[in-house]
Amino acid sequence: MTPCPWQKDAETLRLFGGVRDAQGISRIGWVDVDAANPARVKASSEVPALDLGAAGMFDDNGVILGDVIETPERILRLYYVGFQLVEKAKFLAFTGVAESRDQGQSFERLQPTPIIDRCPEGPFIGALHSIAPLPEGGFRAWIARGQGWEDIEGRLFPRYDCWTLTSADGVTFDNASAQQIITPGPDEYRIGRPRATALADGTWELRATSDTRAKQYAHFRFTSADGVQFTRTEDEELPRGEAGEWDNEMTCYPAALTTTKGRRFLFYNGNDMGRSGVGYAEWVA
Image (cartoon, rainbow, N blue to C red; front, side):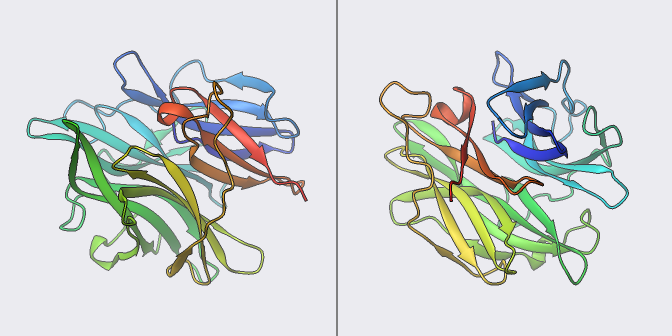
């Protein structure tokens, strides 16, 4: 679930993602694929790269991907969303950070508590899904904030929208400084997993996944001059697959990557928000 690609070397892309057990609890693992042919799997993690947090912590009931960036010191920094079960709400989900010095084989948490915690605008969810260094220094992050729950035919689903905020060091965040950037449309009750990408001309594109009360999961592409003010496009980058295919009901959680050789891929989940697996698409000139 929520695949996140990172170019390990010229020949290899490493896809980090949340891998669920039989109880639906996710740990973070990885799959290495051929950078020239991502359909060819080269290796996969045999144990979690990041396991559950300690009992009682914000991430003791599951961890999924936020983003992965490489520091100038060749340290791989992993931003993740930790889940915790509580008695009177479906769950809580907030952001943690860990680092790896072995190219993502394993990660160690920088702290046991969230770096983005609850706030008045996000009392249930504060989930970082992408972060990028800024030319002038510091970082900009794009997050989802959850405010409550939507009852659809007797089942509760989280309501959330998209925000952005900056950080001087990529670890310390001021929740009060966040700006709301994307809200659900008229038929939607949630839109999240904002994945922003800087383009060569200095502008930004962002992809987010929405859900409607009719349970139509879909992703949309947004454009921005500054990474803050976004416009939704009608681009249909990932149409659903043919009847009976693994992605015929939904294509969701896309993450873009341009390889060192200039190939542009989107990695994404299919039906049932990742149960059916991970696929990829490529831009063709």
